[in-house]
Image (cartoon, rainbow, N blue to C red; front, top):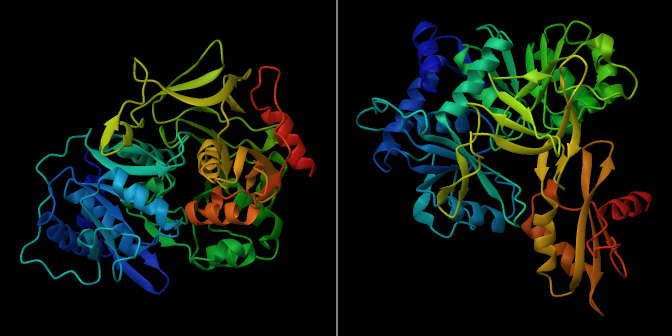
Length: 481
């Protein structure tokens, strides 16, 4: 089924139901459809099906309309984090070889080709509306989500219509989304959790309620908003939920309407999860697992009776009809799923990401417990998870090593009570080298979640007997300091 078919059905069957709510602004399904068709008609005069369109809009109603319009034209959307440094935004736009960029207001300074910029507020009304392509190939690209890359630059995870629809449909059915559900949308659109917020919600006829910016810094205000909006379903990261359990004031303001709480992106410490379950006794909790490349491939309905001490919770059973297997030598999890990426987008073209047989290597170490549930045991490589974001230490190292003052560098993850992990950098400087210029370079080039929380200057990096960097010793040193 095409990705927008279920949304279009909701527009026909219940056009006056609320679809998108952002502060005081509310759009019905009919209004979303009309706005989407208008923008799609304009885009159709500029691009062909298969074009790649970047999205430089904050999470909200306008961004959803843009995404639906792009897909209605048979094009592919590439959401940008507009808070990223100019250097990173410029790299993504050039790497993706985009045909245009939908934004708001005047063209930003970081864009080298102003002709690509489309101000969503200044587009003329079209003379005629565009009809969707007669048939969109399920394997056609629907989205490219850029993540941290181990080669030193961001890499684009290319996802097809088939992949997005398979997950969105599974989630809507599995979590029994209904037309009277009110979904809290917090995930940025360059984050794969947003696929649920947009496509699962709208396919079920539910309303998408955008969490106001800034509430994540005040858990009690976020809890008050969830209560006021009578939110029924919320999908977010464990670090935020742990913050809510600690300081959200749930004892004074419980959430009686919240029926379903989904979490993914990082490990949820069992003591924090147990406390939140106690504070929300009527809410169903689900642990969802999977990298951006597979979206959700495993899930576990939280069994409160099994939340014991510090014992990690399982990632559960296969989701989305995924076929899972474990490498017998490394214990790495391999995934074959209709959710799987089409490949990595690099320098304007698609590159292979799968093994023979269609399996994707996750880089995660897993096992099966006595109940037949998959359990997560960390990474086989050095990738970090920081507040749900994927961070490749090699990308940070490559940037730092470009600084002429640096003779050596290693980045590791250290424990952090709020974000799970934070990158920390150890540096060996050439004589006379100063740290200030290096820190400035990092802040200008990397998003905030990738910037090391600590820069430690050393005489030498710890080494293993084979001469390679001893990352475990380095991690202990940085955490101790």
